Amino acid sequence: MSSVANPVVTSAPEPPSSERQPPWLMLGWFLGLLILCYAPVLARLVKQWNDDEDMGHGFFVPVIAAYIAWQDRDKLLGRPLQTNYLGLVIVILAAIQMYIGTLGAEIFLARTAFVEAVFGSVLFLGGTYALRVLLFPLLLLCFMVPLPAVIYSQITFPLQIFASQVAAFSLELVGIPVLRDGNVLELPSQKLSVVEACSGIRSLLSLTFLSLVYGYFFDKKPWMRIALFLSTVPIAIVANAGRVTLTGIMSEINTDLAHGSAHTASGWVIFMIALAMMVVTHQLINLVYKFFTQRSSSSSSKVQVENA
Image 1 (cartoon, rainbow, N blue to C red):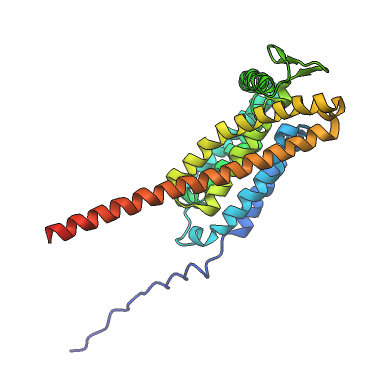
Image 2: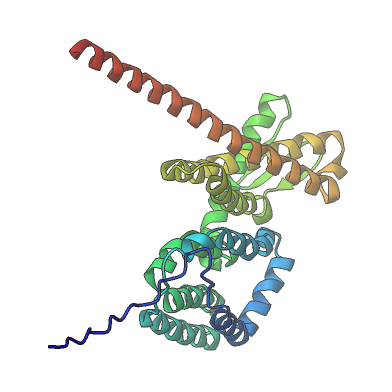
């Protein structure tokens, strides 16, 4: 009696993650299609980056986000990517949103539609796993979209008033008489107006973006990244109030120092000081964290010795 062996079907082993390659053709096709569809919106966005000093950091946002995404490519290729058609639905809804925003002259709606389309494209091409891996660089893209005018004015005016109040108090401390009327400072030599450009919103937006990037590269603790992000708000506000005070003092020395290149240079100096304050804040929080961690570990070791 003869027996016939059943054929054994074996599936080809999956290539290791280091040998897997992302679907470059599909990625390039989708990226090119997005840029083509959103070209008018992106052109006006880039123009605002160039013209609006508050959005000067916008040029760096997509570059840094792309670099971080490239750094995470090994995680992305750690498992096979799966198509998720929910992402395609998001892309279509984003296109509708852009169309509505363009018809209604609502540029914020049209610009955020591009960011939503990028989210949807990642979800469609790589599934939820790819979206989780690339979530941080994708969220960074939100910083390249300027705030709506309504929200912008609601933020800048209180910042203007606070900066003028702190400057008036500080100038009186150093012996310079000042009369404050809202956001206008009456000095012996001239009148200084704390306009929207001097409200501190520029340094606030740039510093919050840099805090997230700094936390990503220099500290892996999620709570520390949140703490750094939150710390940039008081740092930027205090630094800008210091800049207004410095401008008042400089104007009493020479009225020309309150305008032009000298005023711009002082803004850069104050921003670098604010950036240094953020780094110092990070180091101080780390020192406190290490102190209490070591203290708790030594206490637990003592308890274990006593119970032994």
